[in-house]
Image (cartoon, rainbow over all chains, first blue to last red; front, top):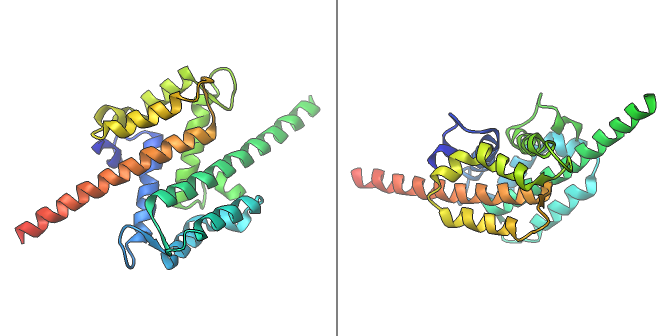
Length: 113
Length: 113
């Protein structure tokens, strides 16, 4: 498993996994528990890492839902598992958007033929 | 949301999300339904993308559990959401391993002081 933590020879998917781990610890270490995100750390992470996404989100409902889910856990700390669930949900929303966009593009191409 | 699909100006976390989407579609398009992984496509993805991980996994139980969970969905196709759940579970296992390793390292450093 140590290779997963070593970016040499890592596959594309292993790189994605490393980037998630790195991102979490970049923010979680700033204050309080080193291994969880406080409200302030979560806010910083969302603003700096997902600013493009949150700023331009067409599918506002999906983002609101994820936010609500995180808020319901009222200890004010987000652990790594909760962070991964958030990123996973956003990635699924992002993929759905990508597929919809791609299908529209294909239909346009068909009409032109 | 379009910026998320455009790697210029993307944050570290957005890059991780893009890499997950890219990886899935790299394998899902090979045969049958373009947007799901068949058993063969899943096997290729696991071998090529998680070979380092599966080959060296110390925490074999975690990997076995994830495999069992995927197998229980017996339609022989893995959709994007199931893929993200797999990657998320592996990333959490990987992070736990990283923290354990890091804590052992810190204890060693304390003993030396």
